[in-house]
Image (cartoon, rainbow, N blue to C red; front, top):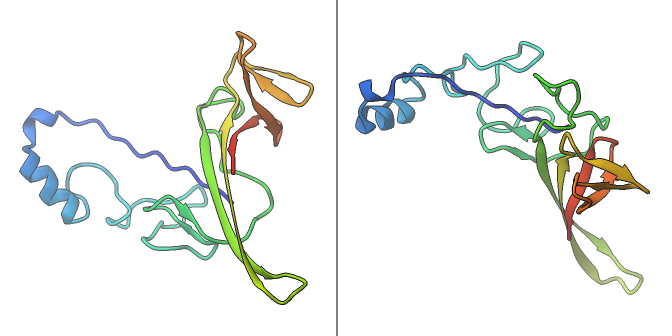
Amino acid sequence: MFSIIIVSCEKNQNTVTPQEQDAALKAGGGNGCTTIQSGDLVNSAGETIETGYDDFGYNYQAHIYNGDYGDGLLDRHYGFDSYIGSGAWFTNHQSGTYEDENGNTCHWTYFVKIIAAPADAYKDDGVWHAADGTEIGPVIWGSFAIIQEV
């Protein structure tokens, strides 16, 4: 399960001093924006988002997921017909240990960065390409491309 939350608000910044902004952020809100700390921010299911990790292993405030793979579904692509052209992206870090055939404990790590394909991109033989023909990366989950994998 991966989640992306974008929160924004408009306010005439000329009416609030930097000191007032800092104080409001330290107090968990008060600057006109909904924050996790205020207890007023909810997810798409209407549940209040809290600081720290949720039951699924996601920490919304830190933008960190620490858990098992879910059902392969990502959050919705609000304002877009699909993820294509949405600018969505995420990174995935994994690590673990295993014991080899000699009884040695071995450590492994994995990192991948995945992006939604641009609106003008096209697929050719399992690889996303930019409109100018530049290779973006292998297709994953239909609408995404792997652009870095370690």
